[in-house]
Length: 370
Ligand SMILES: Cc1ncc(COP(=O)(O)O)c(C=O)c1O
Image 1: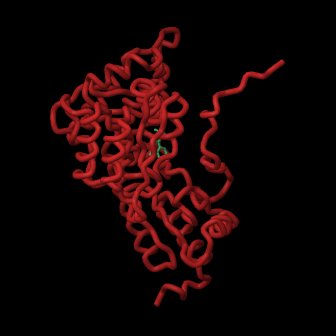
Image 2 (image 1 turned 90 degrees about the horizontal axis):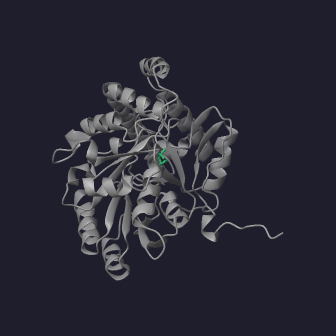
Image 3 (image 1 turned 180 degrees about the vertical axis):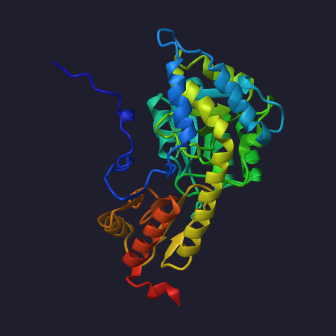
């Protein structure tokens, strides 16, 4: 027997998945540090009783999409409604659906590296070619290089992650508009991955309109404390949402998920308060980083990328795990030699992380306290 073999393109970039180790302080996967509010959990438990389990769920997920449109309206220039909203099983499924709709054999997506590795991975899974443009040394976008490549290779989709994972850097409006103009000049769709958008000072949602080829994807995994729910969404012109909706599987969003998403949106105030705390804590981490022997990148997200200057990043990562603190080890990733990425946790978790890191980097802290 000859065993069937999967396509070569299906091998995930080596070393991407984070180890799931049992540690006291887990700051490695950019999750929210707290569980969702108790009110949400109780309301969801009650709602589960009312679900008509023998029936398929609302295929259009109308109530959820309407509620998402309402909740994001303040960030969008023109009026939006449910027809501007695509919902999916995590924003990863949004990205996959984009590739299935606009990518495929004979087509390409453009990614701006280093960035979220799933952009290129998902594209390859869907049989789409990947064109990678490198960022500048400081991880800002080399706009000239991107514009040249777009003109030359004419991709069908341009992915840009803002704030970018793993650097935490945000793109300004000028850059996003330049990318959008370039996309439109070759008939491409610009997809702005805003998985961390709520932590940032501005959103590309302000550029969404019927006239522009832009789709902004967001998630309930970070700000809404619902990584376990697997719920993401995207906002864009109706003609993009219609095209993608024709590709997703029928009834792909189950009944509980739809209800859970609706109920979560009732907690907007509580979530905004949590985001504010995380942003404050992010500031505290960066302020402490400024006193340590390391370089870091100013983050607009719920994580901070840093590179110890005197000790190898990989060694620091192992030392931290020994001390029951886990951050993301990016030290072996392309362009990220020696880098680690820490998710902003609770004030207590961040305190413990900073204490242990200080200790690992220089013992008593004399190195940088001067
Ligand atoms: C940039 C980026 N996009 C998308 C995702 C996927 O999020 P979701 O949990 O909504 O699939 C992540 C998850 O970490 C991410 O970092």
